[in-house]
Length: 252
Ligand SMILES: O=C(O)CCC(=O)C(=O)O
Ligand SMILES: [Fe+2]
Image (cartoon, rainbow, N blue to C red; front, side, top):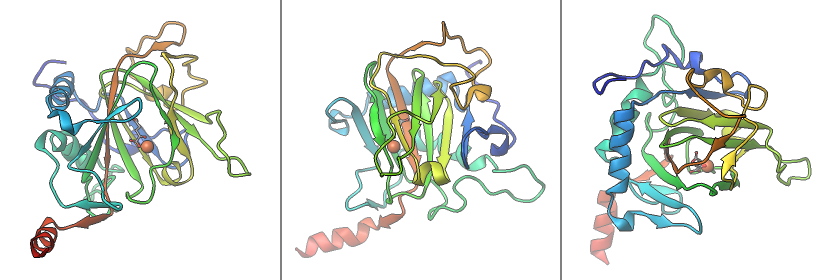
């Protein structure tokens, strides 16, 4: 792909549906170009050091800021997180048709994502199975950068405990977009194993196999991990205006 080209996106998200998963998940293998990926990784690397939050094993940046009591202070995302990704997400119709189309954030409170987590996973490091919680509208758009990684989807057993064996696995390639919504957001948990390579990757084990890049090469169904960075775009439901906060602070 030359530097000026744009990725060729599907005509609608319906063409990118992961049909093996319950309503609703979508996967687009080449959502951004290599140049766009390089530019975004450069911006992440050059962010001031205090931007990184070192968790016990993973590093995280939160844009435009951390949530306070599940609330976001109203601040725009930096332009490198907005363009091209947000514009591209909002230009993808859910379905093909002659009338003006709805997109994946049409039903969200702000009609667009207003918050991005940047997670960086070196080989051997993942994230425990979890749910993303009630602060967000139940749509997550994940853009993967740098390397591939397997996302596991888990269900809870009847006694309420976690079933450690994933019921689905989704392979996320660099520059891909994965959208999870609905039951996948509210009912199931998602996590990434703490391993040095993902194994047993095949049509039988990977839910989005038919949507992966045609030139994907795996040796014996294995994907040795390299550092993979993810951008997770969400719409925080509750947003407070910065102005009122400043006035409040001045009065003190
Ligand atoms: O990196 C990912 O793909 C998942 C990140 C995640 O689950 C989260 O930020 O809540
Ligand atoms: Fe999550």
